[in-house]
Image 1: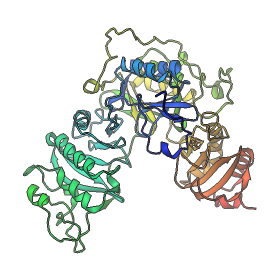
Image 2 (image 1 turned 120 degrees about the vertical axis):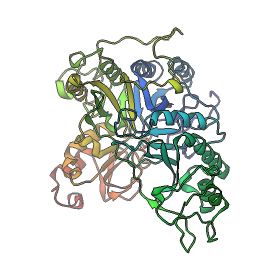
Image 3 (image 1 turned 30 degrees about the horizontal axis):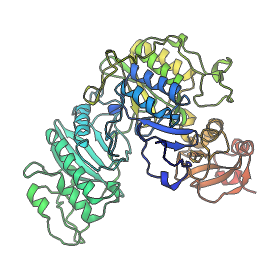
Image 4 (image 1 turned 90 degrees about the horizontal axis):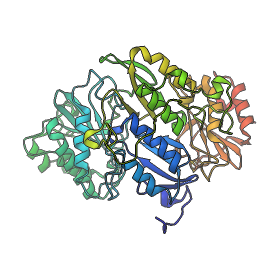
Length: 530
Ligand code: SF4
C-alpha cells in the first residue's frame, strides 16, 4: 500500500472503487475502509469493536452505506493494517482477496422476525454468500437481493440478481434490467444457491460489471444458466404464454427447451421480457414495530448516513441493556449541554455529542468470548443482534416496555427515529473539512435546510446539499440542489448537481432565507428568481 499513488476523491481512477479493509479508498479525510458485517447483522460487541476501531485507527466518523455496510473514515496507510487485524478478531474481516464482493446479499432488515415471511431468508442468504465465494472474477459490486415475501422488504433495491419467495420453499429468480426485473423462473429453495451460482458464473463470462448492462444475447445466457434440466418451472410472475426467445430468432432457445421453463413473452419482434419496476415490499421506516415474538424493533437512521464512534457505542449499549436513556448524554441541540466537539450544532450526529457512560471495552486478547468470532455461518441473528438497514440505518430489538425510552434516548441524541423527520428529505455528502473537494460544512447546512424545506418535502420534493458538482450523495435530479463552489452555493432547481445554476451563486444563509420565505404552494423557481 505504501507505494500506491495518492488520489484525490474526484480522481476518475477512483470510480467503481469498492473499498474493503485490505483495499481502503482515498477520500478527502484520508482512507475510507469498508466493513462488511455478514448479512448486515452485528452483535453489540461487534458494533463496539467497530466504534473502538474508528477511534483508534480512523477519525471517529463512521458511515452507514445504502447496502447496510459500515465505512470507517480517516484511516491512514499506517493504521489500515492494524485496523483490519483488530476487526478480524471480532469476526469482521474481509472474506475474499480477489477483488470480488465482500458481501453478496441484501435482505430485509427484519428478516427472520417477519411473521409473514415464507422462507428462512437468512439461511438462504448464508448459502448464497458461500456459493458466491466459489465464483472467481465476480465484479465487486455484484448484489443478490432476497425477499422472503414478508410484510417488510427491500423496496427499490438496485441488485443484479433477485430472489423472491413465491410460497413455502419456493422462490422466483430474476435478473436486473434497464427497466426493472426480468423474472426467469420459479425454483425450489434448495436449488436456489446452485442456480444463483450458475447465473453468477455466466455473468462473469460476459465480462460486464452489472447485470442491468447486459446485451440481449448475454441476457439470454444468464436466463438459461440458472436452470438444471427438469428443475425449474415457469414463474407465475412471468405471465401466461411467455416463452424464451433468442433475440431476433423467433425460436425457443435450447436452454428453454432443456428446463421446460416458460420464460419470456412470445413477442413477434423477438424482444426479451421486461417486467418493469420492483415488487418487493417496502423497507421498514424509522419508528417502532411490534414483533410477534413480543419484542419491539426500533428502526433508526443516521442523518445523512453518518455516525460517530460514540453513536455506535450508544446503540450497542442500549441494545445490550447496559444503558438507559439516563445514561446517554443528549445532543446539545436538545439539552443545551456543552458540546465536546467544536463543530457548530447541527442536525446530524456530531462527535462527542452522544456518549454512553456504561460501556465495557471489547476484548482483543485472542481469548474466546460469546460472540467475538461470529463468522458467516454463525452470524448473530438473535434478538440481541443489531441489523444494518439498506436505508443507512440500524435496527435494535428491545422488550416492549423498553421501546419508547430507548427511542427517546436515540432521538435526543440526534438520531432519526420518526419517519416524518424532515432530514429524510435531504441528501448531503461529508463536505468540508472531511472531503478535500468540499468548501462548505455540508451536513450542518443540510440539517438547517431540512427544517426550512419541510413544507416542500410534504409535497414530495427532495433536496440535496452537495460539497461539489460531483454530487456523491445523490448524483441525480432533486427539486432543490445546492452545489458548493468556493464557499457559496450554486442553486439548481429540478436538476442534478452538474446542471447549470438557476440563479447567481448565493451564500448558504441567503439560499436558506429564500427557502424560508418561499410559498410552499408555489414553485421554488419564484423564490430564486431575479
Ligand atoms: S460531492 Fe461531497 S463527498 Fe463528493 S467529492 Fe464533492 S465534496 Fe467530496
